[in-house]
Image (cartoon, each protein chain N blue to C red):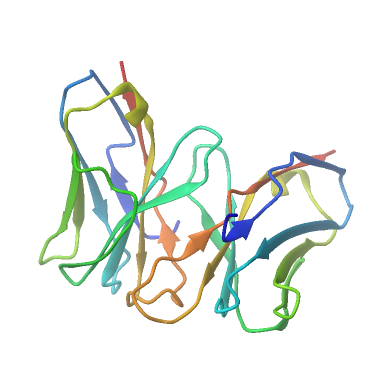
Length: 114
Length: 112
């Protein structure tokens, strides 16, 4: 158990809808990362937060947004969903936010768009 | 050219074999190297974390970094069917707020 909790585990919805994915980092970790992993694709970095502030942005679509709250949990919001958004979405956390920090991953939310 | 290259496999080996998993990279600034194991439908699990060149051993796992060749390896001794998973390498360079770069993963199957 990595200590990173993601909910829900599975999400099935339709095109055009909006969903929110939630992540609770490991106790004591200040930084949260979001990744997308499609079938047979590597981990695509979306966005990073550190202690409530956005720190780095990857290939995140404008339809997607995220935030980190004062209690350090984070939410990833996906809107105007398209079939191509079907993927595993992982959250990871690290103690600080540097790229020398090992990241610890949750078990992901599997998003299926019908 | 991708910053990190990793053979996707699949790599099939008999139980008990020594497995060698590799990544090459192009960014000479990378200093921090990690290996993750990912079982199907689970999140990546950190296996090894190394800094700079050299070897690091943890049980049946050995991570090796050759910065001169821009090449890292993960060796698994006495491989077990439970080692069947996808293995991802990951690298960072500065300690600053830059993204860690992941390889696409090598799928390993250990045959009983």
